[in-house]
Image (cartoon, rainbow, N blue to C red; front, side, top):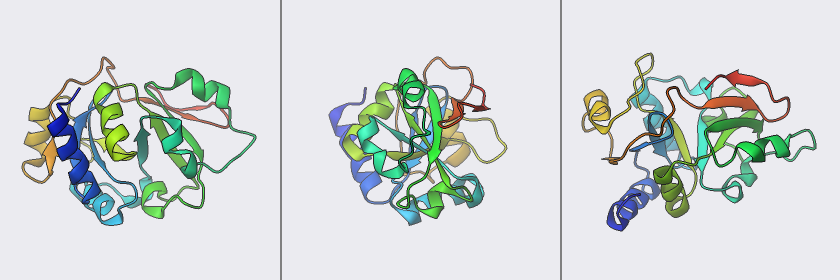
Length: 185
């Protein structure tokens, strides 16, 4: 857990369009407000990641992300709920509210309700976050704050201290309609 003053500093940075790095279930992530196009574009440039790939949203609870999901009877909500909060990212049909800079070339949105205490604390105070691994494209994801600094130097507005969770690989990604595993964890 973050000290209150540090959590509030992170909240202020996110709300002002900044980028922060933080520990997640398996690696360090870089996050920004999904509603702030300039912040997301800055994140994509920093990572050298194509905007067509789409991004994951992390949140502390389903109530923070329901407006991003297009209602559908085909969604396997019991399957989703069995894994949340936890290290499974689900890909849902995207609502009209999901901006192109989040969904990329897809008509879907990737969402995870994290069980990592730092991610949950951040999302409770700052809202849901775009979350992508803290590494330049094609490099190994950072697992420590030191590695984040080595990759990005002072190009991030804040790097939070903490430990990544016990996962050896980034989180599993599954299709919320079919249950298909899109990326093994």
